[in-house]
Length: 440
Image (spheres, rainbow, N blue to C red):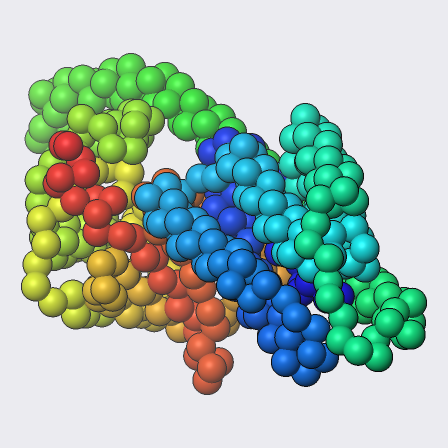
């Protein structure tokens, strides 16, 4: 009287079109269907050969073969597309209902105690599907149950089973109850876990949106300040040029030297303002230029060391064969921020290592400071995450992390095991900064 274990869909959350979770849910359904096929095969063979209850083996094994083909088709679908719709999941559950109905048809219909497994399909549908498809599944299972009360293949019991028929039915009901209870606990536990993971993902998305809004505000303020500073800096440059032509200043070498130093500082300020104005646009905009990994980072590290007058930067190039990429101001500024952060805590020296891991470049910066506090490591990449109390501190690694995220990379940090400092690693996929990506 046992028809076998049910074919049940285990999909953690209701899925909308384009939801990446749909792909994972279908994958779980495929995995569970393999288990269901194995369980049904074992149950059918046990019923046939251990209990001596004759079953239509060819037909029931044919249903299992159909489930195998369904799984292979589902795997092919997941390889072609990365999203699974509510309709596709509804179709999968309907096929599970059809498979269970077929197995019950060949093993006693509604007289089989395992007919209660239809309730499991209804529970899953109510949790996993949209409202219309949940009710459609209720109609489908109710119709299948009603049909099995009138149309089914009776089971022919061996001699001696007639006297214990009711006891056998009760035993089957108990096995069905235990099976449904175990499956529901397993499903609901996994559903709750996936719902918690989805909530955490939504929280992360909201936090990222808030951070990006914060970056936009910073960019707008920086761009506005740069525009405002442009005019006074130009005026200062003109005034200093006029001063150099004054006879009293021209005849005094000390004053000439002071004016030249002031002109150099004004030019430096103008260069910084120009860089801010360029960076306020798209991170991969018209300021990009063709270069290579080695040429870019060699130049950026050298420019940073010269601009900061930092002579204790030890640069190691372990990248390997060079790769053509697109250079842009924002990426260079991110590297500047990364190096600034290390040099500030380790004025005695920093180690900079450029390397390649698979299809990504890594820039590791190791300092000789006191390391990160545990809460700083836990909140790496968040704004104002700094041990310094000055207003505006803690934006350096925040901006580096956002540049890395925009380019599909990561920013990681850890304290050295010997307590001699910390290491921050920027990883960027080469495809994100390749010439093909930039101009394609």
